[in-house]
Structures are given as structure tokens and as C-alpha cells.
Length: 526
Image (cartoon, rainbow, N blue to C red; front, side, top):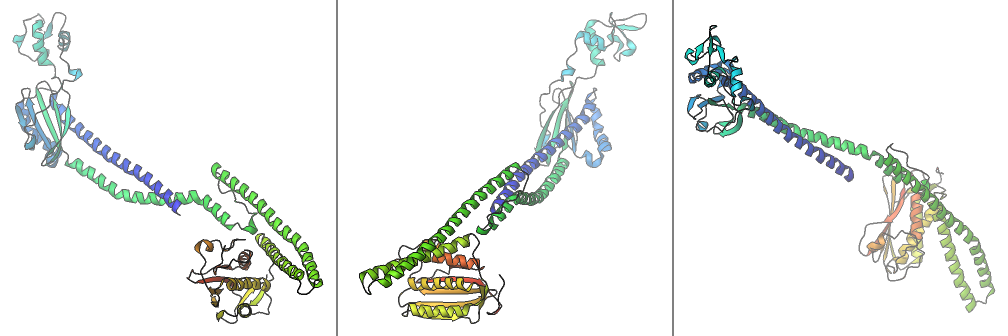
């Protein structure tokens, strides 16, 4: 879950950064394109007026012309000011902001295409012939400019007079345009500085409309961004689930593998090379584990089987030797001690055999309805016989039945009671409790005495693990297999055996088993 969330958050963060970066770039582009559009509008408005030499009085009616073209509302967003080459203001529109009235225009350079004409260029521009003649009908200057006239009425110009005539004939030279954004108290203005060799024209357009348009885009972006991020989060979560689906399948398959189902293998969950490689590695590891486990289980089972026969023979020979020895002799006592160790070794071998079968999933259970309440009553009598100094308390619900193998269940109860007696406090209390919780039977066995240390609670059910010193100060005499075997038997019945809550000066073991509704005496199903 946490890994899936990290992938989704990483995807969301990456996509969110890209989305916000794109939004900032988009808004900046809109602003830039808007300014370029305004600049083109200023250039189109001004350059048409700068192609000829217009008298100053022409601009007196500019407001009416702009109102006609742009309408009353549109023309109020335009501001025009014209200056001559000396900087004298020739015209200022009423809408021109006062804060820009004294704004000095920058120095404008002539366009490369409008460089000063040479003498030959002037001759060609006036359509002069090789003799410098020009038809007086093609020239709008006064007749006194011509030095003479030929028989065809063509005026003759001296080369010194060509410049005057050319100046009268050619259009004014244009200058490069410069655009700036100027902030005033009334708002932002985009001002273009354009001119020719005679006048400089300042044309300003109020950017309120452009700002309003940009603001609409900005608001739309701010509204759409959270929705987009939410969509990206959902998409990231979906992609994370989809990407981790093969891993989840691997996890489920691994969780379902038990000692009795080591032959299972992880299916091919994807066609990706990396995942197929992972599946192959895991299946190879499972195959090796299965072989190793089978070898270990087979060794334990074979060893237990092989040891049973010589131990049985040894026990018989010791029985015979004890009977043949003189009563009360040292030899008889030694033989009796050896016989006790052989019996203990046989019990260990039998436990190992049962554990090997449980590990292999071949623990034979003869299930039948068993009255657990009656078994506990018998166990209480055993405790009273083994430790008459202990006080026994009981809270046993009568008539509680479980579907179990009675012999193996008795082994579990015997292990629990003997453990309570062995490690309990002398003159302490042993409490039996049996209750039914829905479909589960819960048996708790508590004994007074020092509680099990935390480091031992984690390993108390490990095989061959024994606390170095028992909780009452005595060295434990068990083999370290009883609790692990009891837990395996409980789990084979569909239940479990574990430690109860950690309480001071008290140890609690809890056995849970599925409840059987059939009364004892009727056979149950396997």
C-alpha cells in the first residue's frame, strides 16, 4: 500500500510540475502573442499615415476618424501624439495620458531599405533621360525649378537641382519602430514609436482588454489545474495498481505456499522481460526449497523410524537386566536411570516423527467429535495429582465439543498442563478457562509465577529452544519440542496455540479450535 502510494505521489508530482510549468509557459505565451498583436495593430495604424508628408492640420480630425473606425468605445483606448524632427509637439489626442505627455521618444534609426538616395538613384527616381530632361507634367514642383525647356516641353534640370526635385517626388523615408509597455495610474499602455524623416508618431493602446483576456485564461488555468491534478492523482493510482498487479499476484501466491503446498509455482503474470525473469528466479528458488525441505523431512522421518527399533530393543534389554539385578543394588539403580533416559529418548523420537509428518502435511488425524470439557476435567485431576500443593481454579463451560483426534488433542493438553506445573510457582494457582466465542472454542491455561521474558516470548515455540533458566529458577528439563509439537497439532486441526496477554507474575497459554456442533458419539468427517 505504501509503495503504491509512493508511486502515485511520484507520478502526481512529476505530472503536476510539468503541468504547472506548461501553464506558466502558456500564460507567458498568451501575453507575448497579445503584445505582438497590439504591436501589429499600432504599426498598421501608424505606417499608413507616415508614407506621405501629411500637414499637421490633418491630425486635427483624427479623433473622428478613429471613432469611425474603432467606434466610440474602441477609440477611447487609443492615444496619439505627433512631433516634428525638432521634438515640437504637433498634435496630441485628448485620450493621451498626461503621464506620457512629456515622454521623450527614443532615437529611431532609418530602415535599411530607406537609406539616403545617391545621385544616380535620384535620376532614376525622377525618370530623367541621359540629358537630365524630365517632362514637366511628371513633376509637381514649380516651373522655375527647370533651367530650360526643350521643343517637346520637357524640363531640363541641372544636376544640382536633382535633389530638390527628387525630394518633392519620392515618399518620406521610414524609420525603425520601437515598442514599450508603460505603466500609468490609469493602467498599462503599449506605446509604439514610429516615424519618418519629418515626424515622429507615438501611438498607444490601452492594455486593459488584453489584461482582461489574459486574466480569463489565468482564472481558467487556476480552476482547471486542481481538477487536472485530481485526475492525475487518480490516473497515477490506477497506473500504480496496474503496474503492481503482477507483484500483488506474486505476493498472494507466495502467501498461499505452505509446507504442504511447496509444489506450487508462481504463474507467468506478464509478458515483460523483467517480470518474467523475476518469476523464473522465484520459481527456481521454490524448486530448490521444495527439494531441501523434502530431504530434511525425509531425513527426520527416516531417522525417527530407524531409531524406534533399536530404542525398543534397548528398552526391552534394560527391563530384563533390571529384573535380573538384585533388588536395591547399585546395578539396579543405574539400570533404572538408563531406562528412564531411553524412555525420554523414545518420546523425543516420537515427537520428531510427528513433527516431520506435520511439516510434510501428512499428519494423520482421526477426527471425531470430542467433548473438550470432559478432557479438561481429566487434565485438572492430573494437575491435582502431579502438584497437590497447587490451587486449581476453573471456569469451564460444559458440553463443549470439537472435531479432533482425541489422542493428539490429549497430547496437547498434557503438554500445556505439564508445562504449567513445571514452570509454575510452588503453592501457586493454576487456572483453567473454557469458553465459546461464536464458532471458536477458546481454552486458556494460566499459572502464577514469573512471566516469560519478551525475548523468550518470540521464540518459545521454536523447536529445541529452551529458556536457559526456568521462570522459577530451575533449569528446564524438557526437550524443547513439546510446545512446537502442540502448536503444529493445533494448527493441523484448524486452530492455533499461542501465548496470552503478558501479565506480571502470570503466564497464559491460549488454545483455539473450531467448534463442533455434533455431540460426541457421532463420527465426524475427515
